Length: 291
Image 1 (cartoon, rainbow, N blue to C red):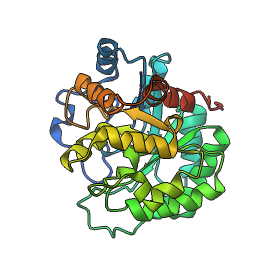
Image 2 (image 1 turned 180 degrees about the horizontal axis):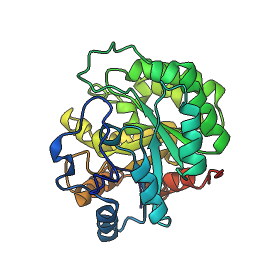
Image 3 (image 1 turned 135 degrees about the vertical axis):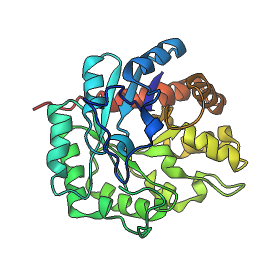
Image 4 (image 1 turned 30 degrees about the vertical axis):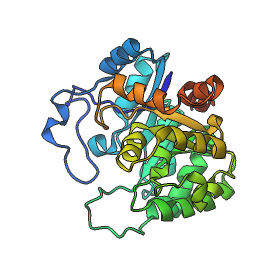
């Protein structure tokens, strides 16, 4: 198995100080942190071979030092996905630094505000601006992949902008976190969402399936297995990867893995393997060139 979405936190606050995007992290953030070493121990116990360590932007902002250092220290097991600021004039240089110089395999962008901040829901400058365009271009030039996170409140508008970007950047794999935060109405499947149908037309669009989806679908009364079969029918298993969201979503690592496997149980072995391992390995196998 290859976990494409694990969040880690260092116990060394002096070397890796907190730098949250909107406010300081809660004090308990560092009381019992999931360090890279603890993650590796959990992976060993659960039979997970590799993982992408994804920057916790609400803990460390855009200083990705810990995830790239962790990946460099454990090159056979971990790969780094770094957070970058789509509003920064220097975002292209930042992508080149974290990927080309520090060895990250991907970069991630999201609205740099918490859900409770008084920011207009339609404010998509972090994705639609000229600076964000430079992030796409730099990632494509380096052979990296780009990860986008949409909240429920900016999902639809964000996907509209993304579709425009994908029309231009056809060689850049773009991974959409948490299945784009799709929560269907009862009786609906992904094919009932015209934005997902349009997204599926772009072969470089990849979806990430996570514990967040399983919890939200369960709470909404959906059959996760049926939804995953529908997603595979629309996108193909080779464009879906699994990520635990460990240290962010509730539950133990074993529980996260078991729930993901249960949701994929109705698929054949080839499709299950693609989602649980092959798609993520393929993304990392692009091997960005280091400066």
